[in-house]
Length: 293
Image (tube, rainbow, N blue to C red):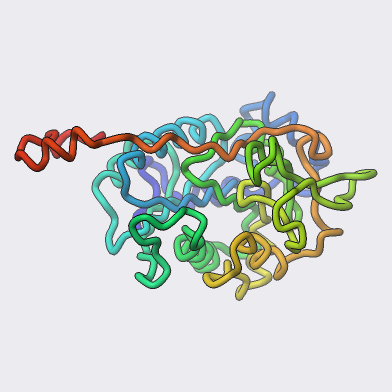
């Protein structure tokens, strides 16, 4: 594991982020935007991102890192699906300017997609998210204040969504755009309480929300040390496999103006067509491998 590319010590950064006890969510949210002097007192947002080697990896991690750098009091936990930490990700993190932890764990071969398999056939990033949960439980204590967000590297995020999740008490929720075959999928709210979900796919899921549609307080994760994502969960039930161990639907905390604003989108970058590259490689004339794309 590598932690924190910045000159300051990560443990100090985490300790300084404790504070603002009992503040009203909306007041604290406004102050985060307007008073940089309070940044050191903000609860830390731990952003967990699974990643794996592919032509788009560097581009997508660069895009995500340049959003995260705009968010104060944030710690990026980047977990590679790899037997070892790769130079590409190591260098990207070192240049990101972010506080970070670099982890790696390989998905078992039996759980990996095979060539030609559709993306939805098996859940991805499960081992990596669970590795991040293990790191948090090993390195943080109940006195540490923070929130954990599972942010895939191919989504698009407004900085507003991070402001919304900062003061999560248990599990906060919001809509996610362009997911589930809909313009958006997310909770239905009445008088400040989640009463159902706007979804059209597997509506019987206990928590029919996307991975990008919720954040979990660090404290509740530490209170439930055995709560993890189920690696053999039925398709679409991965999120529910964790959330069922933490809260009921009635305890969910709606954010984003009672779940009427969309500030995260389930976008995917078009897979590049590399037929010419493959042809040149067969001739021994492939692109210079020392130039990282």
